[in-house]
Image (tube, rainbow, N blue to C red):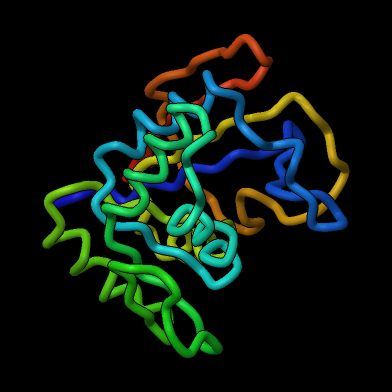
Length: 185
């Protein structure tokens, strides 16, 4: 059985974007990006909501010629993984290895985890909130960026109680802090 992993870059006050929707302040430097790549290297499947998929699909067609090795590495990892996009409005997937699902089905995700040989990653705070509420998330990776944005989309949902066990932490030169938690059952 594979773990379902929620990894997120967030402001110190807990937002993935600011009140105007901007998230440029969360762009990882090469050191943080390499750490994310190491985490994502084992991922077999990504689960996305529509908005997160819209952001992530740039990795499919990005011209990598002049990009640093860390970005080329991530693009290859992303392209090789399977993707499931949950959307009621998307007509067709714009990327390879991608299937659409119209509704969130916790039982389908449980089956996916049971059958998967590699970890499954869930991206986007709205979809992750459903998985957290349904008790499906096994690990949480928070990359806290040293900025307060004062509002926006929360990285973690309100009204969800989970007991967590700190597995690891890492401090980066940029001031970003990575916290790795296991969800206690």
